[in-house]
Length: 261
Image: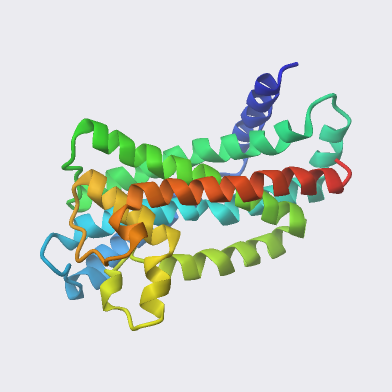
């Protein structure tokens, strides 16, 4: 059996399992919806985009980026749950490649993410967001989001394999994504942050992704700091994705093998 066929079968197995856990689907799709509505209608009236522009459009492009890193807890918990339930032991008995097991998981997670992107886009249209760039730019924005999300899923696989306990995986993943999410340019321009925090936010990969999507969608960007990741956000986002994949793909496969699977 080819590796591609193995990955497809295992990804399909994970996707067929989703309807059995409707609360997971609800949580994954509802979270970005809550952030859009909360910031658009509760905090949005008190936030202006420096240089002009509609805050709802500024926000929704950032929520797209936030949704991509939000995949980290889900896949971490999923992998840890597979270990605890004995699924990994059953897969070990099959004549399949170890890489196919973890790759199948990440592909299934990516399909779930596409559903999340659709939900954010529909919610964004309701609050006033719309892409103003060309069709090519719009497709490029969605493609860039999925590329970085795919890289983040590999980090999630590694966390799940390292912890092996679903509660521990969730705790670690959330402790990583919350600083990345709030110390970034998702909700407000980073130029207003104090020294120290501003520099961290400027080099935060989530800020680069949010900036890239705003530029490609034609949304307001606010003042753009004179730092390389934000002057070249598309390249910076692709570079971050390459770094994550270069680190976490081999680490995940090595960890999977070290567990005896």
